[in-house]
Length: 183
Image (cartoon, rainbow, N blue to C red; front, top):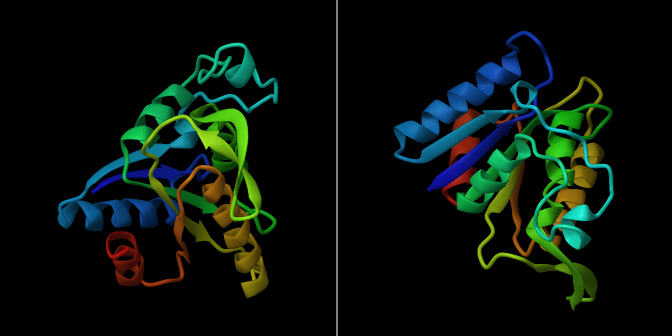
């Protein structure tokens, strides 16, 4: 399986979260999977400015010429994209959020009704599944995780795919690996 692992850690020093993702990457590689680990803090990626140029000015291409292009290519060739993020105020951090916001050129601006909800029309025939791997805050509770999962389930439906799991770094490595390759 071709897996894209996005590390959203914002710390300028190596953290336990970074080490966890490196260990996770190693376990998946040992099992024969191809892993691309991209560390967002090391990439020059602008925040989406909501101009919709990617839909109306240059369809399918963001107005920013930055390293998000590398992420577009990696997403489209992956079978699974794992968004790795420490939680901040119960949500993914700004590094992963900006990457997600900037994925809209991969969709068309047109909408359709799907199971009673509106979603965008797909631009590409194949789109990978997604997973969330997060590091909890001290006050993260089950309700926080439920809300986060619901938000990303809706987001992935918009991309004509699915969220296969939300796991935390408190889950065992074996459980996370199994959820990743056993879906």
